[in-house]
Image (tube, rainbow, N blue to C red; front, side, top):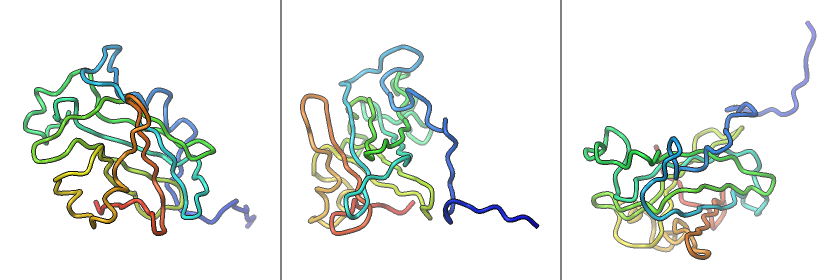
Length: 181
């Protein structure tokens, strides 16, 4: 039997080269029509404990529209959701570990602060990482579950009009808080 060497001893998922389509990171237009609300850019870096970037990591986001309504049947108000806002996007990190999304500033769903759900996955990771990006600290049942000293790690930093930065750090003292499924 002939043995074929493998480059790395890692587990999946293994993403095909076109897993992240061009434009999958723009949530502001559906079939060419603009979404309602304030357009924003969310970008950040995904880094290891030592600050080195993670390339080819897949980042997905999902969020409510500008009125705080999710485009999903589990939201009792989904029939009123913005028909031109998809509410979901996918991006891959580049060599510097940078990802970008163009979206709209979400409204506050009932009982919650405005937020964006974030999921990260890459080859060799045993589980998907789930976290939540907030635009401010305040009363929110998910944010309240995080120790007060770590809540600021979930708040995106405003970098100008309509631009927010949300870095994701894996492990270490400044690790991004992650949530179980």
